[in-house]
Image 1 (cartoon, rainbow, N blue to C red):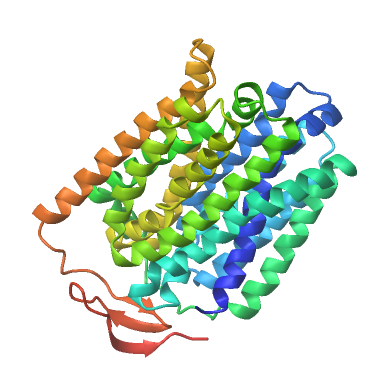
Image 2 (spheres, rainbow, N blue to C red):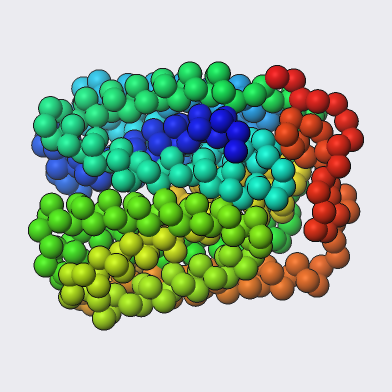
Length: 415
């Protein structure tokens, strides 16, 4: 695999750390800012809002800019957002800083997925995308625990300063290792948005909203479940969060390999498996070893479908791969919010801490239904022969026939 994927993974590691570390530092930040825990929850919500808004707007704004330049610009904005967070003097300024830090998230991953896919042949596309997202999952194993410990031992401000330093390292790595991308063809807003007239694009978004809300309905309340139901200490629950991150990492790698074989079957398989392992908490939640295995399996099945859905949107939003891929990131954050809301709803309704896993299982089945509908449309709709050329290995290539490889038809991309 190209070494450029390492640069993208480093950036994903930094972005994943800043997204999730606030959850571990919330009590310390709330105390320092003299606000309640519920008010401090805005630091998480404003980051997510930044992702949802920034992904489509920044991608559209940069549609005529070279993709490598866009990646570097997004990393620069990421560094600024984290430095603003580190030095924020008030509650309101920290809310604004977190919003700024979230703005480049979706655009970076959206364009990064397109660049990763362009660096390899089509039959290795899923693995290339998964290697970039491995950085995001490793953040949950290494970056978030270390950032939390740093914030608790010294100050939460040092954590965000450290994340900004990771961003600077990623900026250097992308600058040196990622090849210069060819200048985009003449693009227009109408042309970019035309891809969103396609039913399959909206079905891909629906799969993400419901399929990944399934995991977040459980993950949002995992710590109280492990402490209050499974009997783990807070430290033991933190260790299991790292186990969850390990499952995410292995699932992403496995999902990338399977996506190269059949992205739709991979979606079907892992959404079905996610529904099963979430249902299993009914039987494992009160047993320390089985629940640990169950937590690992949710991480494994919950993230294994990400390379497939990214590859799917690259195929279905051919006229606007960067915008479609970035919009998927916005959709992930909508899924995050929906899952957390529905999980909290059943807890507030008195159904207990195991109930969000049942909600998640139902959401996974809804996501599976949309995936099956999308696969059905693949079989009944005519094949689109107007597919534009794509870049592979830095070459301009024509679309491949079914089951075949793309053929070189034009100039080399600038490097």
